[in-house]
Length: 331
Image 1 (cartoon, one colour):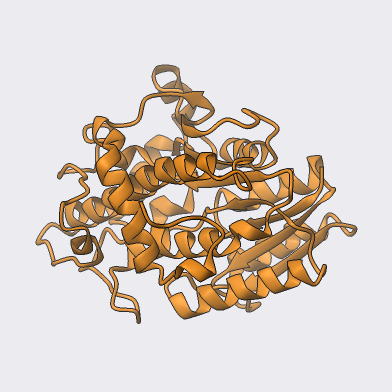
Image 2 (spheres, one colour):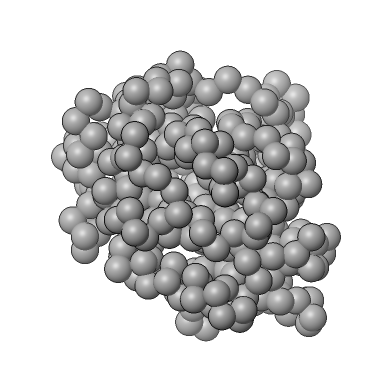
């Protein structure tokens, strides 16, 4: 199979081994790899370049994209759609929504669009990319890979103090007030964003299935597991969490995973993500996965009324008009 695969946050912990797996096992695909900083001063982007350089015949491009800037997101989507229509790129085979943001050490942050940063980066900007580009997929369809976390499920994440929830006032998700406990407040924001991604993903699948032209596009919402070597544990996190990663999670992972197999490496997760993106595993299937296992997500995530309200509201937040997407947005 061939086609274009977009990976956001392509210089991230999971993404770099995912890119390596893609170029090794599926060289027929074209990879569009987005990063926030394309400069040579960024060590993570340089590591991505080093990975790509091992495959001199690979069809790849690294493109700058700041998901905290919705104008830039729409510009990126326009460029990709134009490149596909002008045959500069093959039609889409997959969109992998890998990029994320969290902040567990400071007060809530807001983007230039006036939106809490985690909900915009993790959810809203990916909604904009997906909805704008549904009409650019291959005739035979493809796969959308969304990322959730055990933080969406109250009681599953030891760092979470407050239960994640999608409130009746959906617009309140775009706002946040400081919490004296920065870790608890940041995890609550992050957990809410991951629950929103999951519930929107369920709604996306329903709407895709109802559309005769788009029903061959399937969405999977994966919790990639507890990734003990992820840079996420060292980014915007308190010192104790960085120490736990270095002194416990990393050296003791083989023992820990005997009790909980979801504790694993970013390399393992990267392989799963690409195998899903290429429809090589669970071909044509939809829904939630914990690593590559079919599991039940949180009870709250199955509220279809809130899923549908979130479906409509997310398009509004992403500033998507009915003329800008190939799918019906209204309920």
